[in-house]
Image 1 (cartoon, rainbow, N blue to C red):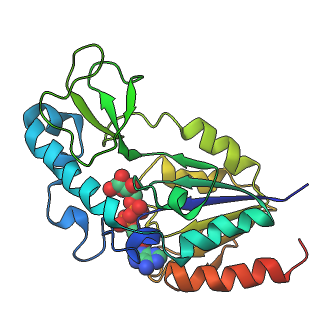
Image 2: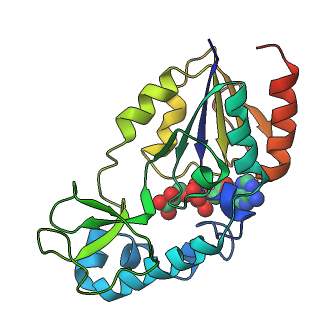
Length: 231
Ligand code: APR
């Protein structure tokens, strides 16, 4: 029976693939008022602005490729039962070959009905246009969990965190809840690692092994460590 390895990833893991993070200097939110482009109120106020913001991100993400960190997480499936819980809306974990990926904050590659959240559609192009409608006749919106909206997959993520033998946090500032709270569900006896080149601010709340490196470097170290031990 393979040990359960659970990952919580954030924008930092996609940084070396050319996708901006949110809160680093020059980050995505630096150019925008978050609530203008990532909240239901912003959508109600100016649908074109919101639609264009995500069309631009979708167009950019389509050109990006997974980096060594994504690829190493995918290859760990040969040795562990790996579940990826990501806050990212790009599909780089899937492109790298990870087979179990939960997107807590939605997916750029999908559109959602603006009157029935259960209606979700794969997008094979980068643009959602005004007039693109769901089967019930309402305008399609980005399939993104905006600030103030529920995080439907959180319960599933909590169940995974509670069963982890190994828990890896990579590339997230741990500032956005409920995602950041997942760490609290990880069993005390689990091996927990944090990979981030910037120190985690107020210090770590538990015996976390902290790898202060970029994701591609940190994952190389972690892979050696995990495969070197006989778990
Ligand atoms: N490798 C690893 N980590 C990195 C790298 C890198 N190359 N570059 C930056 N980081 C780290 C930063 O130090 C920071 O801790 O990645 C983290 C990025 O933090 P944020 O920009 O806050 O991104 P994230 O934590 O994913 O944001 C969470 O907030 O805006 C919402 O919905 C959005 O999903 C997002 C959520």
